[in-house]
Amino acid sequence: MKVFIESYGCTFNQADGQIIAGNLQANDIELVDDIDEADVIIVNTCYVKLPTEDKMTFRIQKLQKEFPDKKIIVGGCMVEIDPEKLEKIGPDISWIGPHQLNKSASVVNATYCGDIIRETGFSKESKVCVPKVGDDSLIHILQICEGCLGACTFCCTRFARGPLNSYPIADIVSEAQKAIDNGACEIQLTAQDTAAFGRDSGEKLYDLIKEVANLNGDFRVRVGMMHPKNILNDVDEIIDAMKHPKVYDFIHLPVQSGSDKVLSDMRRGHTIDQYKSIVSKFKKEIPDVTLATDIIVGYPTESDEDFGETVKLLEEIRPSLIHLSKYQHRKGAISSSLTEIPRKIMKERSKYLSQIKEKITERENEELVNSIQKVLVIEKGSKGGYIAKTDSYIPVIIDNVELGTFVDVKITEATSTYLKSELL
Image 1 (spheres, one colour):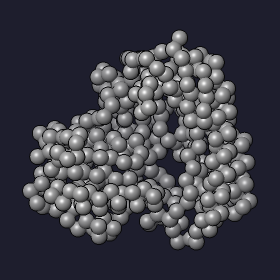
Image 2 (cartoon, helix red, strand yellow):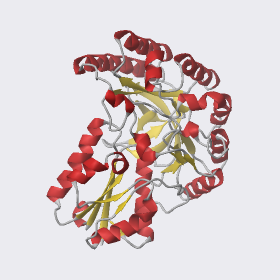
Image 3 (cartoon, rainbow, N blue to C red):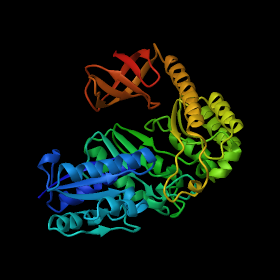
Image 4 (cartoon, rainbow, N blue to C red):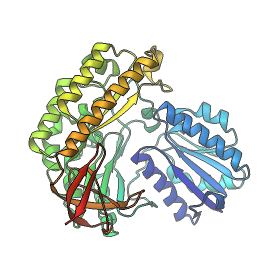
C-alpha cells in the first residue's frame, strides 16, 4: 500500500500533515510523492475562508472523479467544522480529525481494506516529540500549543482546534534541539495564537522563546501569530526575549480593524489604543522589527467611518506586511447571522487598502537599498536563485549561494514584496 498526502493552509496545518506522514512511516506504510502511484490519498484540508472551502470541496470532488479506484481520506479543519458538507460530497470517505493524528495508520489501513473510518473529536494528545516527516529539513515547524482563548465572531477555525492545549516547554526544547542537530536552521514556533501559550499550564511564552534561542547551533527562531489581547500583560517580557540575536525581529500581530466599535463587534478583546501601545513598545525596543498584521475588510457592521479608521491606523503604524481578507460568512461563526455589506463596497474598500499596502511595503523596502544585510538562505526560488531572510524576516533574492548558510549581501533593488541583492 502506498499513500500520497497533500496539505493546505496555515503553517500549523502543514505540521499536522507532517505528523500524519510520520505516523504512517512509523507503522511501515509507504509514502509517495507521485499521486498516480498512490493507493490512498489523504487531503489535509484548510477551511478558514469561503474561497478555501470552495477549493477544498472542488479538490475532493476532482480526486473522486479522476481516481475512482483510489481510497480518499479527508483530514484537517473541514472534518470538525463542516462534517455535514463532507458527508454530502463523500459519503464513502474516511476522516481523520486534527486531534486524532495518532490514529492515522489505523484509519489508512482500515480504509484501504474497504472500511469507512471516521476519527473525530478533541484530544489532549501532544503534537511535540512525535514522529514527523517534513518536506524541508532546513525549516522545522514546531507546534507549541493548539486551540485558543478567543471568541472572535468571524472565526470558524476555533471550532476545529478547540480550547487551548499548551505543550510542555521541556518537550518543545527537546524537539527543537533534535531538529537543529539534524540540520534545521530556522525554527518556526507556531500555534493558532502563540501569545496564549502557557495560559492553561502556567508556563510563559517568553521563557519558551529564550530556551529555544539559547540552544546550541547557528539558527534563527520565528515566533508565529500573537493575538494582541493575550500579549498585553507580558509585552515587556516578550520583547526582552525577542531581543535575542537568534530570534527574528518579526511580529505577526493581527488587528483586523482600525475601529474600536468593529473590534468590539468582533469580540476581539482589545482596543486600538492598546494595539498601538504594543506596536510602539516593539518599535522602540526593536527598531528594525517587521510588523505583520491582518485586516478583515467589510465586516458586516463596518461603516464608512469605521473603514476610515482602518485607513488611518495603517497609515500611522505602517505595517511592513498586511494580509487583507474580504469578509465572508463562515459556518458556525456568530457574525454569519448578520447581513453582509454590498460586495461592490467591500471590493472598493479592499482595492483601496491594497494600494495603501503596496505603497507602505515598497517604501519600507526601498529604505534598505544599498544597505548591508546578514541573511539566512532557506530555500530555492521558484524562478531561479535562492530566497534568504534578513534578521527582520524580509525575503531577499540572491544567486549562487549554499542553502542553510548565513551570508552578507548588499541590497540592490526593492519591490513591494521582496528585496534583490548581490553577494559580498
